[in-house]
Image (cartoon, rainbow over all chains, first blue to last red; front, side, top):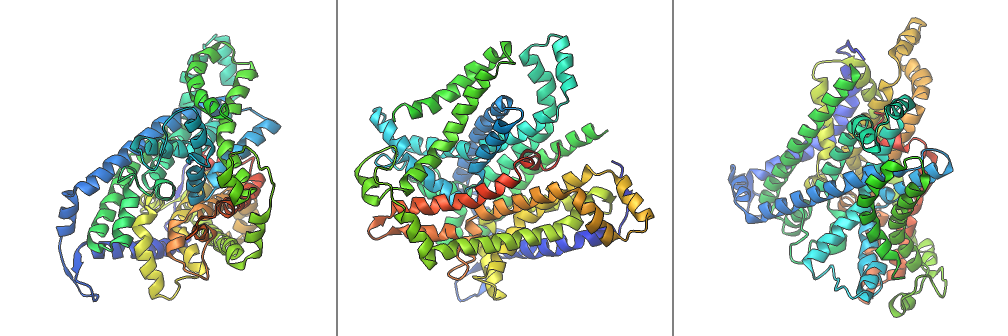
Length: 290
Length: 293
């Protein structure tokens, strides 16, 4: 749609600007402020320059947390996106069962994140949890608080349980928007099921899938509450993702300077990757719009 | 009991085999039904287990392993619903969630209209900047928020949490509403102006009813993300506005964890979401696509 140029539109955006400036810019400036200063307590600060950034760039702690974070995000995207598409392809198209599936699938999305952690904490326990108990009864040595692999598997299964529905719902919305004529044409051409998926459904879903990937990437990169409740970042540091490490540093040890430098770099990484997704998305949007 | 888990494990294996096989029989619903059944089972099992535990006594939870409560008890729920320090957690959460939804929508509506209808200096950069706030990890903002709201005397109030949640809800609301508004042809705006409508009157009387479903979906998403967030709401409150999610940590005491009450509290946090989702069920998919389908 062609838009008219109108500078007065700024007035309509003004309330958002003021609100977000208050709730984002001021706190962000506080972070920047901390990141370049050092303190010996008593609220006396002095200029530290870029020392904290230099420190953090050379600290194994941050690189390890970043590595774990990247691995986690990559794994859950690799599972949730194909699984979500697959579920969407199998959803009932209309009627009661369609509504039923939609509502049931949305349920995990609406559970407070610490409750999600609690649910899986209970579910995986060997003494009182269905999952832990069953695995134990089958003779599998499963303990997510001691074993690193078990902890990772549990955190990943939890995230798949929690968020696959989001991808599925988005893909489903994309599928519903494909006109019947496309399928009829494919049937006349005797296209295989794979061809229908590859050349009709996938391109038509591309836009919403980008949104799904963007949202899932952003949220998985910020994940804090669920693994914190489930494993507390353990065993050892095995599931200490970036946010958990940051909170430990800032609120636990009160190392404000390093934590602030960490925060800014963390934010920059998310922004850089999201910017790539966003650019791809708007390009797709623009191509469809012409 | 041991046959329930292997099914969910199997389902993921089934899926890889299933795809090529489905090619041959696209119009037979049975395969799909099996897949959906397994997936929904996978989703529901952990929730069922929570429900199961919330209806048991602690001695039954720890003493015996049973798939359903042998001695059905509502004592856990009773404890929560009669103790003010418990149920006030729900009230507090609901208060700031509703405040946040109202604030977010009020500021996002005009902004989304501006983004969907006009181009102005810096509009694209502004839009992306708004989105970067959706990407901001709450962990980055926890401490500065605490200091900011303490210094202006808003610490431990509902409005503080409501404003803090605007950080990620306003950009989301703008994004969703902009998607829905794009679908409304601009001829409607122009006709209304020719008919002599002023902008505020046009916006409230004509435009808002047209995108009512979009507003509903945006409200739903604001509600949802504010309801599920814990890190910021816990950091910004201590007693008077303490959310239910933070209250739940009380069940861990010197005598161990009060599993029954913990499970009951968890079940009760699912209820509001389940209620609101029913109202927007037909628009959920479109909403998750941010109005862009």
